[in-house]
Image (cartoon, rainbow, N blue to C red):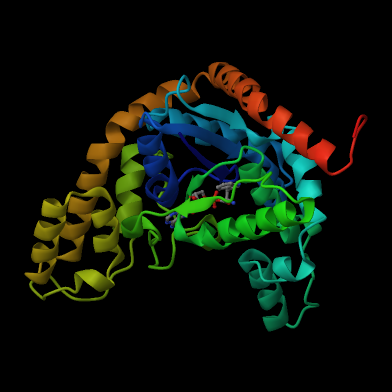
Length: 335
Ligand code: TYM
């Protein structure tokens, strides 16, 4: 059996990028008989970006409801909150002590914060917490605590998975045994980087996201109508490959639908009409999920119960695994 594991940071509301990059492939993988799936709400990661407890709780509820609405079966999948697993921060420390500081200096999220400071003439590390710096080690612990083999993610997370491999390798080398499994990223090339409203990667930090459910059908349509396009008029041929409208359509459509949409753009369909077709294509998939989502989000206690049960199952794996590591590195009694 292959162990598949992935998480979503609990800041903000789930968007189309989270759905096509992580949730949809992860739910599909969880239905395979040869897959043992672990999916979680990364609320420890949320602390790096937010000190607002209510916002983190709301986001955690929305993300959990989204996974369930997208078809995750909590009987099959170990579905939990990261903050319910005390072995994760413990392993984070073990890994921290074998991780080169230089490795973390190269992490994208940290480097981006430093570059921005330098650009604006600030002190390089101004406003950068040790939490942001340590982000890749925490993420490595999420994966390695469960010895996951495959991690379905969007392209923006590849570096973190590679770092988890490096850290695991280093740990195994130092302690002389294959204690930790080296994980691999699982990327769907077609949707690895879904563009947002402005054509850059869809991301909470760029404020260019299209929410999956928030605001309902009307808001989905309005947001899609705001996707930036060139100024070609109806009747003028459009270049599908340079347009977010086309790329997002492709992430939801079959090959035949995509080919027809490409032809329509090349034949000069207007951008307004193209966006309406995009909205209709997405809505076909989203409408039934939205209905389930609304029902789920109205019952936070039931979701809480599912997550608690998930944490219990998860710890049946992580607790003995970390106990073994603790012993191997000379911690605790009897070591
Ligand atoms: P996060 O919360 O930023 O994003 C969650 C997932 O959505 C994917 N994604 C995208 N995929 C395609 N196109 C996009 N525009 C797009 N935007 C987001 C991300 O690649 C990710 O798969 N650090 C992680 C959460 C995490 C994690 C883990 C993931 C914590 N521990 C362990 C895997 C394994 C993050 O912040 O993702």
